[in-house]
Image: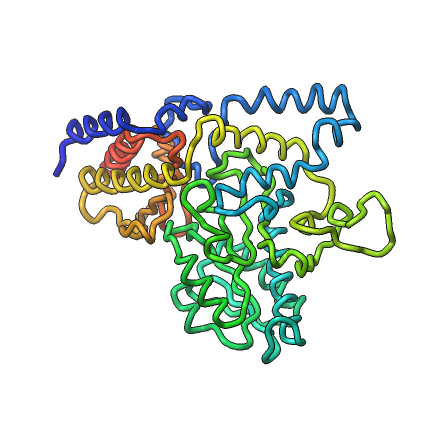
Length: 410
């Protein structure tokens, strides 16, 4: 078993060699070891001043003029283009706005509509596509939305474990909704392989990227993903309730039929036409007036990636190093049998969090937070620790494992 002083010294060496260490200074942090960025990212230090400018000058002085002069009207597409490289997409395919839940609804219904249109003589033919497959371990809201979308489109809803999707696909499958990273366990699912399997069955793939975007490479364009959604308040650090985003692959945009056709996605939004005519491109994913304050706070937060020339590849490399080191420290410090990792050990199957099964997890997390180590708890027995490589260091990781061991012993 490693001694605490040995691992603490190793943590110092790793932090000294960390190519992303300087980025940490761009965030508002304190003495707390914050390992909950997979729920809410830390505040980039320059965001308050930018938001103050939006409120005082753009809103307070320019008022209505800011829709044009401050670029408010085009912000959903402009900020979408800033997120695009972080999920492996070319410009013109990501639009920012609404919540993840709303975007899941848009994407899933649109996917089913395209599949059913194919069956009526479009690009693909065959039996009626009247089935939606959904990740059986999905975050609950995705399941709620999928159930409603199934009722709306006349589809049956089938929950399936992601690994079993290829065998569950059939000629009646219209769409498949999957999570890139499981929110409980941190398991990273096979986006390229599952997307290929969905396409081979003639269906459409919709991916939820909430727990992967900003933490690891996604490769939406490279792997031919049809539609994807994600939030921006986790690894993208956009702030509480910051708007989500919707990705629509370029060649599918002319066929994207949103179930929420709002005036912002109209071809002539200020024409006030009684009949709806969709705009071209990813703009079709818009609905109503964007939430400008949250949207522009997100815009400011994304500067971290540009100004520090941070690459997703570097973030992924550090993420794996952090989670590897945390598991080593837990193994060295925590008494045998007290916790069990439910996060896969294999790098190809791991997101940027570590989930530990613990009998009294809820109470343990409360005590950890009291001692300055912030993670979170998922019922019934999981301690979750999220690692945001932009501001989490190796000393944080070692301290968290040491405090966890003391907490469990005490």
